[in-house]
Length: 180
Image 1: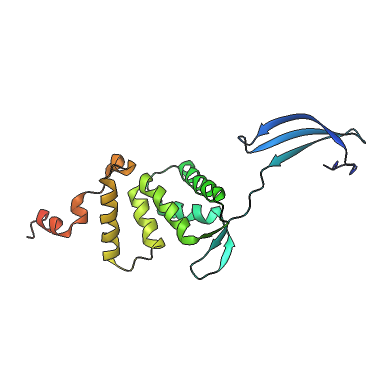
Image 2: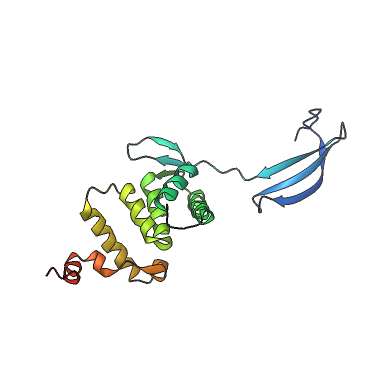
């Protein structure tokens, strides 16, 4: 490590401690030439994840894009911003742990949907409608039916208030309204 003051390459470490919630190491150093002290931070260098878009284009993973999409889906749901940040942290950590550096954008979308399904079903539907490019009401109904099936298996969403079956079955809805 070069001294930022005199550029001498020899120094000694006076103190080391964990920083940034264990994500880095803070070291207090002293230059053996000029005697001045300076601080360095040591972090793990992550190999960048490359996202392969639907059109074949490649770009670096951008967590802010994922967060923006999730925030948009979660508007007016009352979910705290910190919870959304944690969700993106989980996705980013999962991508970093993979041995493959190129990830199709569809996989990232599915990771988001998996987490939103347990977090909030309205946010799940909103995100799915954009991500899966819904063309009409049938796409919404099909996704609602799939979600209802998943809720029947006891996910967290069920405890937060599942979607009523009458919303998913048009014949039951008509019967409840007295149309049949």
